[in-house]
Length: 150
Figure 1 (tube, helix red, strand yellow):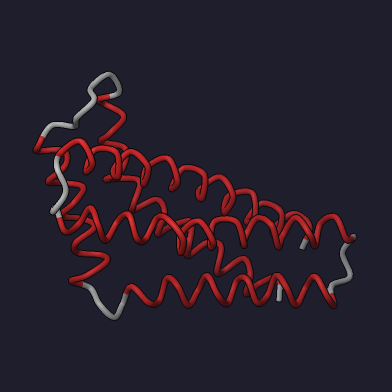
Figure 2 (figure 1 turned 135 degrees about the vertical axis):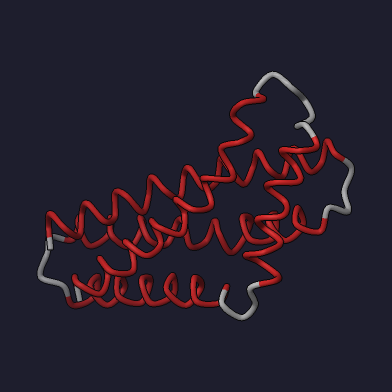
């Protein structure tokens, strides 16, 4: 089960890395209340491709998240590792999964539509970047925990 969890974490890390290649564009404009149109267009176009145009392939990411949560829960119940490690594993996979389902994906879909005014789109792009950085930290810690502790 550790191998499956590590594979899921590695896949999710790679997905986050690709997302962040677009998200980090917001970092160049920290002082601006509204992101430049070219930045918004680039980020929104990426999220249009991955949330809408690539359907149903986007469901693969959700499926991998669910498999990772299921494996972490199974390890919590039956795993030989100390309870703190098992609880940590569940937390490190559940937190980004819930964040993605509850906030990141809805924000990305909304940004991809480009229906909101530029200040709202800017706030969405910044929130997505911030949330993805949190998710990346959780998934990196999960991967390290699984690889080190088995």
